[in-house]
Amino acid sequence: MMRHVAANALTLIVVALVAVFGLVTWAKTIYRDPGPLSEPLRFEVASGETFSRVTDRLEEAGAIESASMFRVAARYNKLDGGLRFGEYEFEAGASMEEILQQLNRGGNVIRQIVVPEGWTSWQVVEMLKAREELTGEITQIPPEGSLAPAGYDFQKGDDRQELIERMQALQDEILAKAWAGRADGLPLQTPRELLILASIVERETGVSEERDQVASVFVNRLNLGMRLQTDPTVIYGITRGEGSLGRGLRRSELAAPTEYNTYVIPGLPPTPIANPGKEAIEASAHPASTDYIYFVADGTGGHAFARTLAEHNANVAVWRRIEAERAREQSTGE
Image (cartoon, rainbow, N blue to C red; front, top):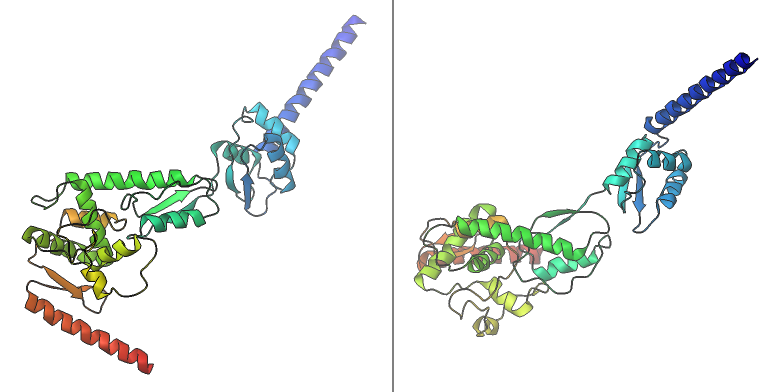
């Protein structure tokens, strides 16, 4: 009798173990097999949201079949305590395992903001303030020239001031490298003066191939003790980088003795007038070897360069004819 009872008990234990093993195997299969999503799902986890609430919403969104099973799997794999807020995109057919691991890695939806070359710090701040995906306040306008024009990846909820600090860190790195490798004999005493010159070069031309030539004009003028005579510095002195002037410069403005009027003051203005890009900084650190001391627009988007005032006046005459022709075409509708 006792032998019979023992045999039955052993049988029950074996059956139970087989059942448990089968249940575990089934659970692992469900955990790793493709999930129910038929198309990618954009999903956001808010700051402070509980793991339980997130799993319930995942089930409601059709990303997982069972929130309860998902939570059990998370506890079993010790992944229930690493939930990170952020914005996620789960691929069609994403398994529970893939979703759970992604929730522990953090948001995977990457956005980008682009700072164009030659923008002022005020413009950059206004752009960041307009991006509703970002959080936090920018307490003050960063120093002009301190932000590196580039594309910056970010995620929803990132802090605006932290983005500013990333831009400043990159610009510091670019400037330090350019200053350390600068050409010999430049009429510049500090990295800041290099940054000021680069900002002027940036505002004077958008043609990459001629930046070093434009830089050479200003370097030659500085070496000769000539005034830089560049309109963008005068404009910055009027607007302080807050929007465009929206009109041409007046004669009175070109004659006014302000600290940014390079038609009046000697040397460089006191600060950069924009945020120069890496190419403008490098061109200013390695200007072309030329005798040019003048340049004027040539009608193609670039500039005509000259060594003498006579050459320059001839180039100016050509440019004025181009302007007159364009004005005539506009007035006649041609």
